[in-house]
Image (tube, rainbow over all chains, first blue to last red; front, top):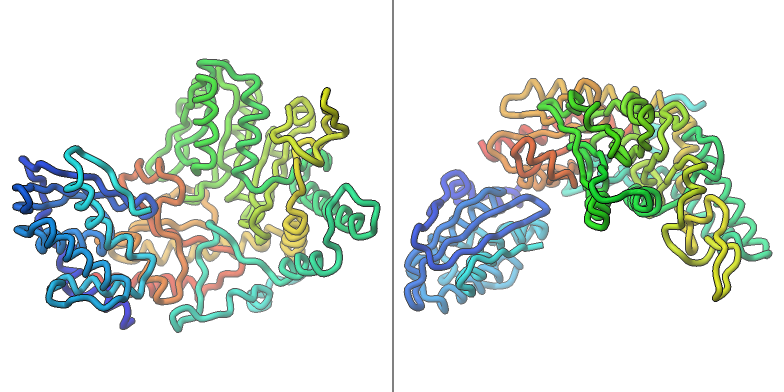
Length: 148
Length: 407
């Protein structure tokens, strides 16, 4: 059971139950749909980009605890960051989820996502929102991404 | 006949005796694919060690033995389904290929724009998509028998749905997502009375019910071997001989011809007309071994044990707080789909796996059913005759563990 506790840490459970920034941004200038067809996770990520800076980011949708918590943590960590900083953070998130050594300082609270490294089938749940936010800022119209 | 002894039966299935994450494996994903008894594994092994060669070709001894074993397997299937002739048993890759074959070779030549194909809301994607493809090709319309909240077919409009434009009724015998046993005999009677041909998708039924195609009086019956304790990649299309004879081949190639020249080709007789290329010989032999295995006990005996497990598990889950069973039809087989309040099915699957309990979580290739209940997915436990009462307890314990973790 120790692995399960690593995956479903208190922070994950809290963000799953009470997701932060779970709302639509009325004047978002970027957004994208993310979809995990096999497990049915679905979300929309909204981004308000001012030049190079993510001034607001939010999401709506439904999915498993891992995908919801990851999306919620993501919005908290990316708000106020530049696109370059956001990329650097995602690089560390990806490292920690695939078992590589990551920069703990850059990760901060996101380190709780490292639990998925023992559950390869769940990595796509944790990365869904990150792929989606990436697609959103890369495009000036609504697009869809899928992690499968 | 061999007496039903759960311990001896479990001893026949080597895969069941292993630990997953330090816990004994509890395999409750039988609706996705079933495990294979030693008798099936050994039949396949024996074939490759002693008889392997191509069928219907060589005059040498191995080819004859391979052909004999392959054709004997066809007879075993014919006997098991109570079809009237071996010519009515076509070996295919699985139920999916069989439905595609019927869609393209039987229905396509006779369907025109605005004709109708009738399926139900409970179908597996394999009994939806081939028909949607046919509709795109021909301009025909796909019509759907609706479902009720218990997961049964809503037959109030059936007399209108079966009409003069309906070119086929293609209906699942047992729902893979919910376990509902559909009244296929009654529906077949209604359809055939109006001259409408009927295909029954038996993928989820054959492992749990004794099927008699003559008693059902259907035109086509299809199933997959791997759900019937046989290898993957082998399946069966039963078709009424008169219909199969009139149908064009589905695929061209070797074995399905009598003679080939560049001015034309004469097709082989039934069932070979539909078996282009070298078939899955070992798979057919494994399928016959699986049927022989079942018949040692009799399907009724195995089904009774399995039904007891389903009833037991249903009663236990109904008594649990925060657990909702999806699919409460009066007549069900093997399948128990459920939701745990506040826990996404995908999380349920991971937590169960940590306890050695293998279940399916997801939409079960039946997304319209999920949409009906407005849920993204369910957790699904599905039983086979080799499951035990202790494994029902393990299922209940895994649910409790999940609730604790998410509590």
